[in-house]
Amino acid sequence: MSDVTRHSGFHLPAKKYEEYAKTAISKGLAEGKITPDDAALLIEFVDEISINMNPQRVYKHYSILINWRTFIGPFRENQAGDLYRGIQQLKGYTRENGKPYSSHTISDYVRFIKRLYLWMVENEYTSIPEKKIMKIRVPATDEMTVTVEDLITEEEALRMIQTCWNSRDRAIISMLWDGGFRISELGTLQWKQVKFNEWNVVVNTAEKTGKPRHIPLVMSKAYIAQWKNDYPFEPVGDNHVFLTLDSCKPVQYAGLKKKITKIAKRAGIERKINPHLFRHSRITDLIRKGYQESVIKKMLWGNLTTTMFAVYAHLSDIDIDNEVALHEGIVTEDQRADSPLEARQCPRCYTINGPTMEYCNKCGLALTKGAVADRTKIKELLSELSKEQIIELLANAP
Image (cartoon, rainbow, N blue to C red):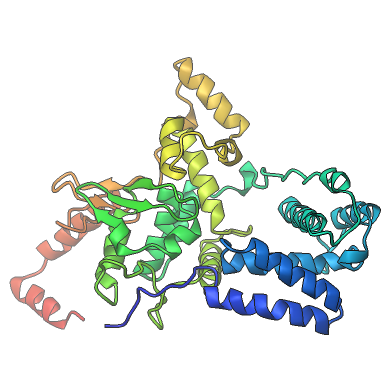
């Protein structure tokens, strides 16, 4: 059996970031971005602060601080005014693609340079007074980067599931919606974290925040079960749930992001769809459906005191109108409409089926009006055939 438990990192293997960190300085020197003295300062600084830092974060420090030399002079030669002017240049900087840095990027840049110079003051590597550096304020980030118009609708999520070409992709898309997962949570998910129950699948994860989350999935249960049946190895223990279809290795961020983009295009969605948009969309969907705020916080963050709830709540004027109408005893057209992503429970054997499934996975009962009509038509056609004709049809069936 192939070893699918080894997964040194989701976005990129940790060893890759270690290599990037090692070459960042030499590349910066070769390209003339930094001086030998800059390099010595950065190495000493990062070595000191990176005791409990992962390789990705170490590389990020090197990358950002080397790029800072675009806006300021050699680190040891700068005065307070040089730093202040550099920050202003950073805020107005336009990249090669014509776009400015995001508020999150600017915040990281300012935070890192401030920390570097406070360390330099402590070690007497600069003559800038500490109070001058403390005056530097890290800019606030713009958390509202997603608008109502950006959100994925239930109809769009359904179309994406319908246009998937294999059980793995259907499981990924349905889980992204159903559980509001971060893409890294699915990328690192192991079978020991997945438990099938009578009416749901429960996923337990503490990825990213370290806070355990209990996430019951209903709509996506049947799709996860299908992928489990198709899984190339034994779906147990430390084996990663989602593998590449060609080499059967744990999926990586770039591959999943590209796959989701392709599925969205096949579903006829023209605007840009990124994996994290599912999380924004699902949280807003749960709010619209009346889930308690405490339940959403516990399920999506594992934390009742999270401040991120407001960042993910993207409600429109229509949502406000519907809420007022509900409390006034009025049922609007939006509230009358059934959810296209509701799971279909078989009325005969009570099996939970996915929203795209016309027939029960367990007993074969028709679950939709269309499926009932098709089955009735088939029965009528068969009733017109003789026993010999039916046997001949079955014998010639592919």
